[in-house]
Image (cartoon, rainbow, N blue to C red; front, side):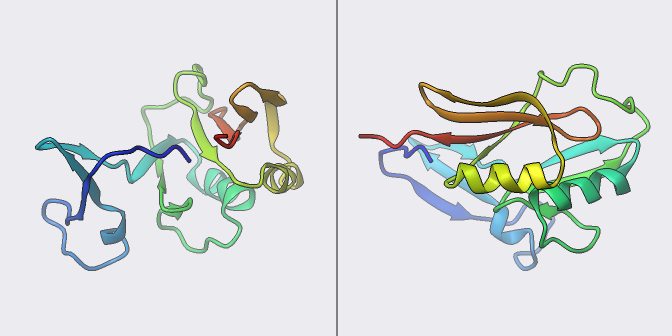
Length: 152
């Protein structure tokens, strides 16, 4: 994790029109600095032509304990998988947006992904900033696992 120094006022607030209780409440956070608001990303919508297959893949590869058809909790960041008619079966520009997972135990996550049979797009490699591996989901969307080197 990268630490940002400086004083901040973290507040949780309901999204407009939503009650303060419920599973989404804990994910709605903003940071105030110098009177400006920096919203915290809480979820991403992944449009697909085959939501059941993609949901099963994400559960098997990245969220083995997840059950149900709602958003998949990926460590406090929600993945919403939705049927869409305005997308192709395969992502034609998968490098345009890559979802990165920052991990503390790269070897364990890599083993979990290998056991799930992920398609490695770029082999695992050590780089100056840390260890990286890029893989793709069944729709061709790119994802990465990253373990940054510790600050000395």
